[in-house]
Length: 85
Image (cartoon, rainbow, N blue to C red):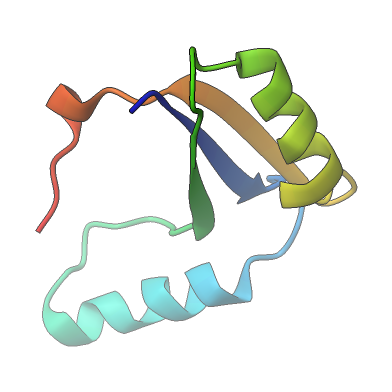
């Protein structure tokens, strides 16, 4: 089924306390080479027909992201490139 991925991130100038908490915890598990961490959201939208990037941008702008403090990107999902545990 055709999918569009919307990635939502806080704008760079917005403080990210969740990301800071993760960055502060990394040395406790032996990771010392990470300068910073930013936390965001990934939303996958499945369309019944052809994926509509313009419609997905409209959905993201009106519903999924707060444009005052967040930026978003809209891309077609690439199942072959997805790796996870």
